[in-house]
Image 1: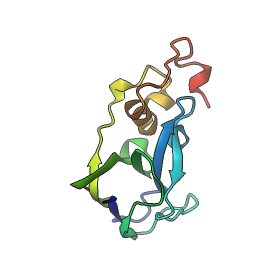
Image 2: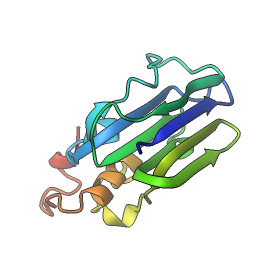
Image 3: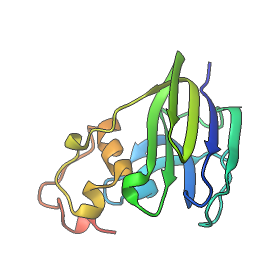
Length: 157
């Protein structure tokens, strides 16, 4: 049984981007959404950088567009500390529920995975504070670590 997702924006003019990606790999040389290799879901409409209005983005839709070991939902606000990050895997019978004053997310048949910043190597602030990049290291711990490049050119866009 595939995961089923519902996302509701509760407060207008909070999120500039909301995206969901089927993650198959990780590129540690870039950060933000580009570091997670895979396809974006077409279930969540793009808003071209304009703020999303309040209301449902997606209601009880099955996440079956792509095959990938991980699914990542990200809601981007003007302040990175307020961003919403939910990463996980298909797990029949489990449910993830996140709600705050800005957004409500429910994903059935899904197990949320922790995003552990300590799994990431030391890097410049843009990388070290990026939850997408941190998750990449958690999900793909076999990714080659180049101590000679940490915080250097390889971690810069």
